[in-house]
Amino acid sequence: MLCCARISCCVDFRYPISSRLMMKKLAVCAIVFLFLASSLFCATKQNQVTATIAVGLNPQGIAITYDSRFAYVANNNGNSVSVLDLTTNTVVQTITDVSFNQPYTITINPAGTKAYVTNSNGETVTIIDLATNLVTGTISGFDGPSGCVITPDGNYAYVNNYGGAIVQSGYGVTVSVVDLNTPAIVATVALGPPAPPYVAPAALAITPDGAYVYVVNYVTGDTGTGTISIIRTSNNTAQLNAITGFSGPFAIAITPDGQYAYITNFGSNNFAPIGTTVSVVSLSSNTIVATIPLGIQPAGVAITPYSSYAYVSNYNTLYEEPDFGDLTAGEGTVNIINTKTNKVVSPTIQVDLSPGAVAISPNGRFAYVSNYTSNTVSVIPLLGLYDLNRLQPLYYQQLNETITTSEQAGL
Image (tube, rainbow, N blue to C red; front, side):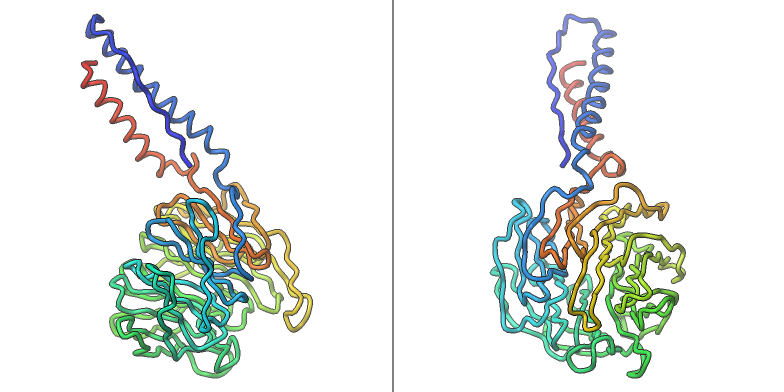
């Protein structure tokens, strides 16, 4: 959180004009010095965990309201949703409902009135009224839904079917198109044949203009087998496997300026091979333009509102038994990528165990990370001196206000 200094001064109008001009310059220098000093003083708490919130069992997806006031967290094996007050970093409500079946992601509609929860072990998406935090209905017909995006006009949603309810988990091959006004599935987009190797759509993202949905296909999780399919929302046609060369792609985020997508290469669910990179895709050419080495099992990714930085969680967790019954987590971390250079920048942020989803508040001030085996959410303030693009507007506002005040006083 940025500390701001206030300046007040007494003006003696007996001084000649040249002296008043000198005082004006001194006032400008003072505001610059105090602003930078206050920023340096506050920057020590940026990009490190300042709060840890205990939530339900195995938290995964996070959605933040557009006023940055509340967050909704899907507790995957707790069959619940935790509601967080982000002004106090506390759980203010836990939503439970019989429809929850390993809830995985949460998506808030553009109007900010409803949230849609994908039930990854079932065939439904649960609808929550955000005014009351009550479940108001479900949408049926999915198969292990694990992601949802909504068009900017709020009329349609795209939900990827990873499998797990009708076919085996990882055997899904479709994306469902939902009319949210009905609400019901109105189209199904096939991304591949229902035969090995299954495309296994794992996550998806929509371009800022709503024209295209990019779907990452996990396939087998082996090196280089993952793909991206692109759905044109105007007619729901798909360009299958349009981009290739990913390794167990797990999550995707598109920059707010619509120029690039960042895809985490988690690796194989069998943990051989283990993924350690993030792929950067140019959306103008639909090609991979950079591969960035990170930690073990990059999982979640989110991008700041100014498209300047990507925050990526490193899951770093293995299963000791063949049936995934013994989860052993190493140190959980979050890396920061400068999206202008596609280089990892300091610091590496230590969070709790098995960090999964990353969400950044719409106001750009905080990142929130769900820690799957720790049953917590980590809170990370983002504003720091390294991101001068975000400091400049406030600096110039303070500077202009000081100059205006000085001029009104006759300086």
